[in-house]
Image (tube, rainbow, N blue to C red; front, top):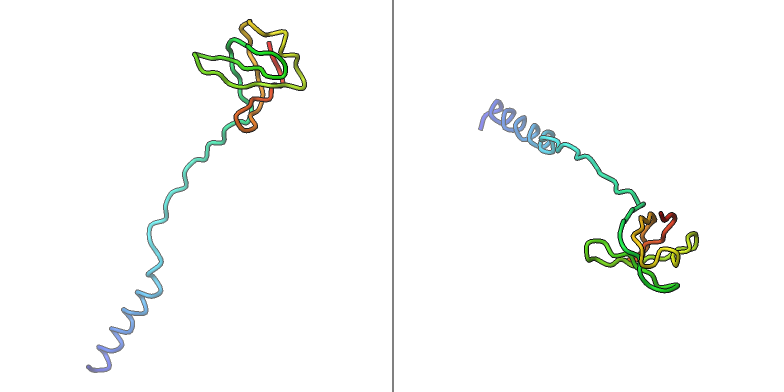
Length: 94
């Protein structure tokens, strides 16, 4: 192998090492952040402190230190709050 061929091969190898990590950069995707506040409209049932709201046949456990949920038992209500585990902690009810 002559000197010119060695330099050419060396240059190709060096280029491969330097440019090997370069490639198309993936586009970032838009991150959608869910609001921690949830609102449900349905029928409230239960007795203190075990209440639930039923929406389209699905029952969700609710509780509150801010709202007297007993006023809404047997009625259709709209409750807004945040989940902790599977329980919705109600901040507001109408």
